[in-house]
Image 1 (cartoon, rainbow, N blue to C red):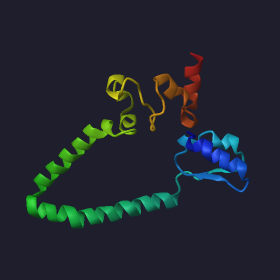
Image 2 (cartoon, helix red, strand yellow):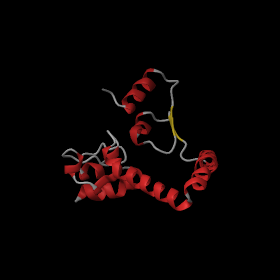
Image 3 (tube, rainbow, N blue to C red):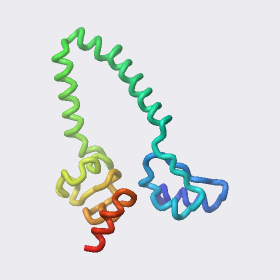
Image 4 (cartoon, rainbow, N blue to C red):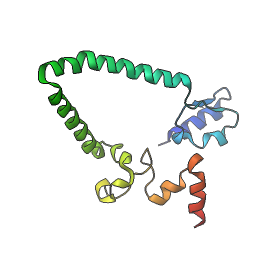
Amino acid sequence: MKNYEQTLLELAQADERIIVMTAENRAAIRNLPNLLPGRFIDTGITEQTIGYVYTYLGAISLVMRGLVLGPAVARWSEVRVLRLGLTTLGLGFALLPFVPGRGAAYWGLGLSTNSQGGQYFLLHDGRAKSIEEAILLHAGEGQQSKERFSTT
């Protein structure tokens, strides 16, 4: 099965009109800038992106306060609603390692291999299967640490 990066590369090689554009997270396509010189654009986090995020969060906040929290506090009291929220948050964190295919990656080294089916799932996407592999897969800001690790 081809991964996302391989698929994009094949499509771009087959059609010169295709360019690859990404924003903020290029972990899944980290080799494409070198393989497609001049046809890879990383926009990064832009002011527009940040504006959209805050607009979205503001709208969600208004809906939650007006339609959910306001009526809940009026009915059950602020203390009970707070306890329910904290309990739900704790339960969500406790169940995170059991999310199929993703949960354990968020916990990183905090979990032993015994709780992850006998192996590690490191980095944000869980693709590194050892601490050494996680270090060697780093680039960008982690490049200097990777090079120091490789020489020891």
